Image (cartoon, rainbow, N blue to C red; front, side):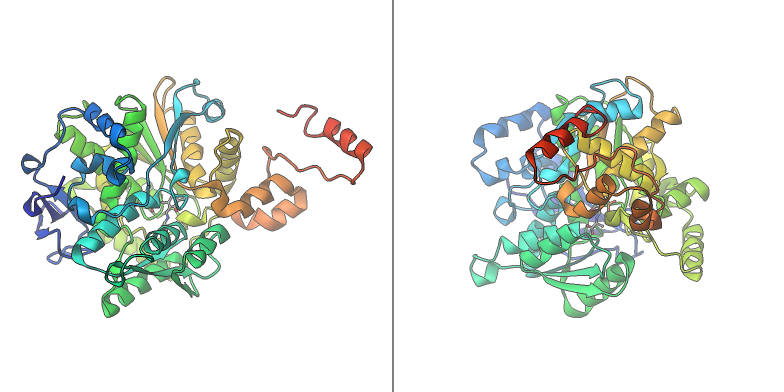
Length: 479
Ligand code: F0G
């Protein structure tokens, strides 16, 4: 279904400003007040199904790429672009799975903890949901050079989408330029952007440095930016929530738990539910928990320690500025094994404050020890993840301990990235003992690996092998 131009537009999220812009403008902030932008819809001019079950009909026509895509199947809810401009590589074929190991670990009943596994996307992380929408907007405005700063997954996704245009006629090709912090990116992710042919700039510094530079370079060279300050990207990420609802037979869960880095996901999720509620398609909005890594906990500190709230858009900007000034003065760098969320200046901070208000949210921080233990629990369920993703389950455990989540509530934890993105951390956790473990992971405060599944070293000898099998683990293979 094509999108009538005037039925979708961009709007400043600051209610006191609320300036609007057409969808054909390339913006990452409001020209009037500098705040972030939303994609907004005149729902009266959009054709939205009266019931969410109507989306299921598209399964019958999955040969059509827009119906195959787990993003564009919901196009009526992100209808800012005509069908012929949509760029899809088959993103969003993901899975919501009840996870007994995680439920037990968090002290919750079976069948109440669900993992929304976004590692199944073509580039192995949730980013493809947003990248598909960002690329579609780029096509709409005729952009051909695309850039991002990244902790690794946005860049892998950008590289994959750009690569998908390589065999198209020259005027339809898109090129990828990625900025990453040197040495701050998991090898699996770096390998993707190199392998898919993206121009990869490794900046001596952190993600926050790369982000600052890519904005400058984007402006200087007129390159289209696909970081999550791009409001169109977040429209794609809304669909993760639609798929959770769909998997629950359109019943609203009680909680959504998500790791927080640049805070694009949390912002997008709240917008998804707010819109569905406004459209009368869901009766209520679930609660949101955003989980920072302790080594990159800006949101936690601003929300929980400084008490900053969205407050109808009148949030305490001065308190945030002072916080950042102090962070710079103290040279407090982000440091976490969850490198995907090793971010000190989340670009969507204000949108996330709004999300927390819309979803009656809470913010937590999890140590790297908690993150790696939770990651081992997730892995035991058979769908492994990278460290950042496990912050969700680590956070859920805390929510139960703090009695914020109660038994019987249904929780969807978003598992944002695939296990193989960052295999080093996994192998270190499961293979190192004592001093060696502390030597490797002590800089992240990780000192134990009580859920380790050690590989068994054995001579190439049948008797020795059989003996080793008998002794393996704790006497049982499923200890
Ligand atoms: N989980 C993973 C695996 C990520 O890659 C990211 C962000 C997040 C969680 C945090 O999501 O930013 O929406 O709060 N990765 C970005 C990147 C920053 O460059 O790949 P968020």
